[in-house]
Image (cartoon, rainbow, N blue to C red; front, side):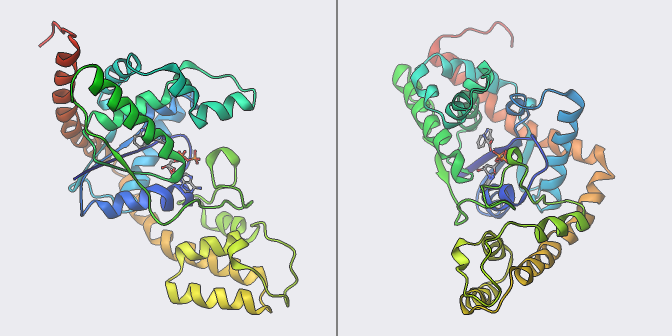
Length: 323
Ligand code: ADP
Ligand code: TRP
């Protein structure tokens, strides 16, 4: 079974990215043939500063390697090292109705806010479909907000297969138990809301951020509902099951202040990500090795992409004069 996913280098990775997507990618590396890439073409829809995009691309690579993605087990690469995805994206756009793309949440949200929409943002799901279909991916581990894009990919695979012949396999989204990770303000944690807890934030500043998490004003002595608390939602992700049960009990019993839960959360954060900081620094000190990893991953991925593209071109009658 082949698993594929991408993550945009559009800002520092955070707990939402980790528990929503990245953690599954790392866990699946022992069960599936993995393809994981840094979606730098997609990031151009928001990052339009060359130095920043280069830096963010490297940062995503370092974050994944530090968290334990093993380049011996999976192909880890940059989206742009397989330029065939842009070709496939074009071909898919010719069999896809404009109406399908108009239904994308990412597009509708921008329009609703009155923000300008580039053609790149509008056709974002087509490039994502190309990313998925070009490696004949069976499963796509992502967070809940990406499911619509994968359903669109299924539709686009169907349009192509019906128009020409059966070239593409139907990919399925793979969600983990973590639905939506809340940010420090209680909304969905997201780079665009400025409410994130970064995986490799500076320790003191991160502790401060955690201590400033928004909670309700229930007095210390009153019982509290853990299921309505964003601090508890993060504790659930970081603490062992028995400890979570104990916090659940303490919340409901009353007599516990949110400060105690936050303080423990800061400790758990440091215990989980602190030791990885060193691994990250070791990779950061060897940029040539990181580059080698990405190139080696790209070679493996591109070989498959080229084979699939030959089939695609042949199915639709595109003749290419180069060898
Ligand atoms: P952001 O919203 O910060 O820009 P992305 O859209 O780049 O994050 O998301 C990258 C991956 O991380 C996606 O698979 C997405 O589903 C997952 N993800 C992002 N934020 C969260 C969150 N708060 N909870 C769960 N998963 C998330
Ligand atoms: N759109 C995804 C996100 O913002 C990133 C992405 C690009 C992706 N191409 C993909 C995810 C292909 C899975 C498969 O998170």
